[in-house]
Length: 119
Length: 124
Image (cartoon, rainbow over all chains, first blue to last red; front, side):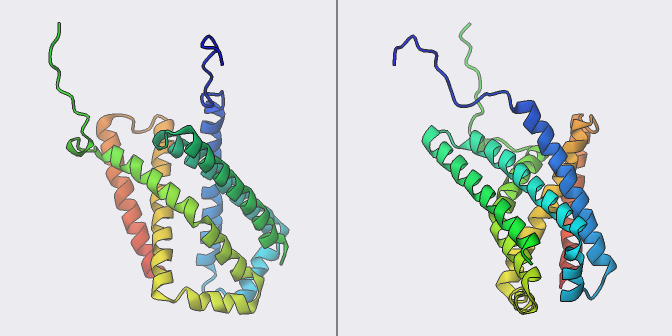
């Protein structure tokens, strides 16, 4: 722990532009899915259980749904990370929140696959 | 040159401009939506799992407290989407000037208010 050691910080890598772009791409994916699902529900008034599961029995819809959910999780990670970066200064607490958020999102990925293909 | 300059760093004395208000609202609704994720996944799961869980879910969602939570999530999603579209447009160099940024902030807030109202009427 020499004083001459370079003071390295755990922030400021080179992910800025990539994440900025990813945040926008995932936003467009989520919007497209939102329009699709909202449109479907509005065009099918009196939607019941059979019609609802019928929609999700299609592999294309399942894949699109998973793509949407993955977009949500990436988007959530970048967004929450940026917010935490701005307001939570102590490195320990910040790291703890990061780890918890990443673990939660990874669990959501597994959960999403179970929901979509486990039925 | 040791001029006493006015410092305006007291947040309570700084009036947040409208575009700033839209920005912080985008952050708050974003965090709220993140926190709502397990709830929304549970809703999706129960809506698909079986007729029993589907009917049960429909009953639960009729409860006033559930409606309130759902209303909050719907509002957050709509508000976040509207301000998100605004940010995307600013990225595309649309509405970058101050006056336009103020106008688009007003449009964003008005649009999300109207859309939330529409969703509310449609859902109940």
